[in-house]
Each structure stands twice: as structure tokens, then as C-alpha cells.
Image 1 (cartoon, helix red, strand yellow):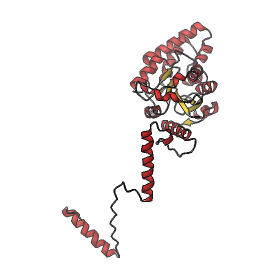
Image 2: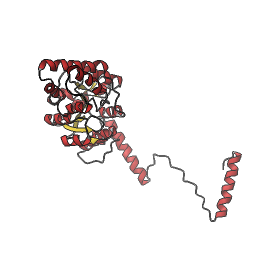
Image 3: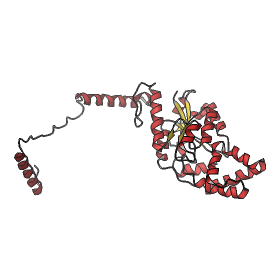
Image 4: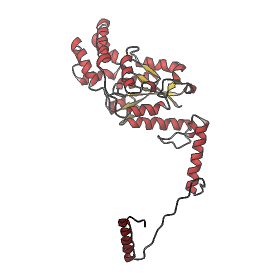
Length: 310
């Protein structure tokens, strides 16, 4: 099966959040005396569903509603972390192949602000935010159940109608930095890939069920592009992350161009490409002895000093 869509967690995966989110939550903790007085305790809330953990801490629905509104209000008004270096290029690269989706516990207003300022808003076809649906597994199942979500964007406002031809059996991958997200992906029947620069450690992400854990953003592009090419060729071609498979090309013109390019490369290797201008043969002047070499070198240096060609 081929990859149909890629879900991106926001905080800790697309943006740097370790300090930014904790500093805001610390204010909520102080306001409501939740007992989450260290960053490590805050990160531990994301080992399962964040909002479920909050509910356990609060103990009653009224307090939970107040805590949520306080923290989400801080996120809407004061949360502005920078993107992880390199992730903008990864998003633009993957948007050319897949339907991209943001799946986050953050607010939809915050997500819009961050992605718009980064110039990436139109690279994502859909956003599932925590203030709309706090259960990430439910959001993933909704996506899987509705074929209309297959339409992707190619970093432009319009939806790409050609992307609706994906097979129902095609797979979805979640990219995340938290153990809780990996577990929620498993609940929804979605594959998960971790990143090592967020809240949770590589070993913990793997133990929770992540297939792989990226150390650098560019690994995500390499892995997913290679898998997409391999699936399109049914395992019958040697694909590289930076190249497109001829069998997965979107148009006949691209197919012809790739075929012509392949033929030219083969002819050049065989020395039979008559369409390319012949390269001039290098002039090699053998020297029988050291004295002849020194004489020629001296003559060349004199000509260069005078500015005359040799």
C-alpha cells in the first residue's frame, strides 16, 4: 500500500515548544494549583492524551473547563514559537507528494497564526485542533472514514483534485514527538514516525511503537519519498529521495522527459550519444625527462607573465 497522507503534530514536531509551552502552562499551574511544577511533569502529561490527563488532575468538569480555557487562552494570545530549522523545506517537499494534515492539541487560531507567518498554511489540506476535538485518535478515524479528505494542497490555496484518486487502502502516517501521540495513532490504526527534537526521548518513542525516529528533519523527506517511489514501482525500481519515479510521474510529458533523459544517460555511458556536442580531447604532452618538463614550465610562466596565451 502507498502512503496517502501525512499527519504532522505541531508542538515539538513543527515548532520548538519545550520552553515556550511549559512557560505558559506554568502560569496555568500556578493559577489552579495543579501540582505540575516542573517541565518534566508537564512533558509527562503527553505520554497519554493531554486533555485526559488534565481531566484526571482537575477531578471535576467545572475545574477542567476553567483550566482548559485559561491555558488555551494563553496559547491563543502569547504562543509564538519558531519553526524547527529545516521543517519548512520538509513540509514543502512532502506537500508535492502527499496530503498533509496538522493534528494538534493546540488551538486552531494558534495553528493558523504559526503556519501563516511561516508561509506554510496552504501546504496543509486540513487541520484537526485540540479546541475542536481533543481526542486525536477520533480525528484520525474521521479522516480515514471520509474520502473527501483525500484532496491535498500543493502549497497553494486551491485543492489538487488529481489527488482524490488515491486508493482507499492507502496508508496514513503520523509524525510526532510524543509517546501519547504514538499510542493514539495505534488506536486509530495509523502508522507513527517519531522525531528526536521534541518532548520525549528516542528510546521512549520507539518503545511506544514508533517505526522510526528522525534525528534530523531531512530524514523525514528521504524516508517518505523513497517509500512512495518504491510503492509506485511495486519494488521494481531503484529510487532515490531526490528523484521521482517514472512510474509515479503525474503527466505523459514528464514520463517522456524522464525516458529521454534515461536514454541520453545510457548513450553517454556507451559513447553513442550524437545529440551531445563532442568534448574536445585533452592535450597531453608527455615529457621524457625532468629537464624537458622544467623547460616547458618556464616557457609557460613567461607567457602568463606577459599576458599572452600559451
